[in-house]
Structure formats: C-alpha cells, structure tokens
Image (tube, rainbow, N blue to C red):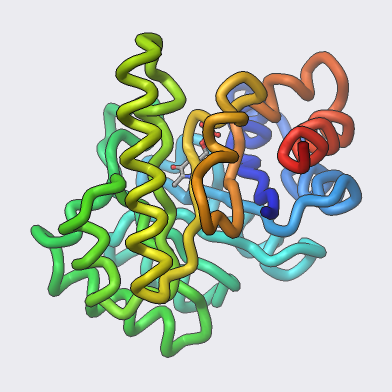
Length: 237
Ligand code: PXP
C-alpha cells in the first residue's frame, strides 16, 4: 500500500498570511524524499488554498506524479486538460464546506462525469472518482470508464461510536471488494490519521491512501519528513 500526501494545508498556511512561504514545491520534495508516491493538490473553485500557479509549478518541477483533486467544473477541467496531471480525482465541491463532504453522486451526474472522465483520460490523466462505498455508486463509477475510485473514508474515520465505526468499516471492505472485482484501482482517503489507520488497513485491495491534514498537523511538531515517514512506517505494520 502506498502513500499519497495531500499538501493543501501547506498552501493554507501561506494563504492565511499572504506570504510566499511555506512553499508547496519544497513540501512536495520533502514528501518525495520521505517515501510518498504522489502529491495531491485540490484546486478549489474558491482558490482558498492551492492556486493555479501551484498546480502549474508542481506539474513542471515536482519529482512525484500529481493527483489533481477538483470539481467537475468547466473552468477547472480546462486547467486539468492543460496541465495533464498523472491523475485527476473528481470530487463534489460546495463553497461553504470546511473540506470535501460526501462522495460524488455518480448516478445523478452520470453523463457529465462520463464526458469529463473520457476527456481527461484521452488526454493522458487517469481519473479517480471520490465516492462513498455504496454498491450502486461503485457500479455507476465503473460504467463511467474511470480507471480508479477513491473510497471516502471520512465517515468511518470520524465515527466516535465503536459500533457505528465497525458498520462503516464493513461498508468500506465490501465496497473495496466490489470495486476490485469490477477492475477498478481502489484508493482511499479523508480523515485518516495514526489512530484510525489500523481500521483502514483491514480494507482489502487498497492501492494508495491519500492523506493530508493529519500529516501536516503532525509535521508542526516533528517536521514534514518525519511525519510522512511515520505514516508510511505505520502503514507497513
Ligand atoms: N482525498 C480526498 C478526495 C479529499 O477531498 C481529501 C481532503 O482534501 C483527502 C483525500 C485528504 O483528506 P485529509 O486531509 O482529511 O487527510
């Protein structure tokens, strides 16, 4: 299982003060040195953290493949077509949310998603759909032609009631099995930290975990390289 690091909150620290630091490229290089396999950046429509210039500069100079997380919005799709990141992760996006809430409604937006998936994959980017572990949604995701899904782990990761957490983990396990049997690569992400990681590690067929907030938070105390190494070490246990 591999680790992709989401560096949005490196940019958050920069944007809250309008400074030039901390530098997203420097962060990406440290993640690479520590053993991460990819760098995720979410170019939000409101540009609250990652800016267009981050995406272009990272795509030119980052030593790791870029996973561009984004809404299926015309303006952002144009940028993705121009940048040609190794992977694009399509997510639902609401202006007021703190972070991505819930997965894509793939059935409800099937035609628009199918069109974007084709456009981006024909352009050389693998497309991943960020979805809840729901049978119908997984089925619809495979039908869009996307090669990858990212299972939304947020509900499990944030659950405080152990019985609820167990039920949510079962859904992730069943979802991963179904997606794998449909030939999809299975990634997972959202809310993963060192405490809930052991549960996540029981989910089969996981290729890459995309983790951001908990690593950047940990980096405040021990440095980014150590925080990434610590997560990779814990993933291998
Ligand atoms: N994957 C997706 C699709 C996300 O939207 C996010 C949050 O931006 C993450 C992974 C990383 O989540 P976290 O920052 O909670 O680790």
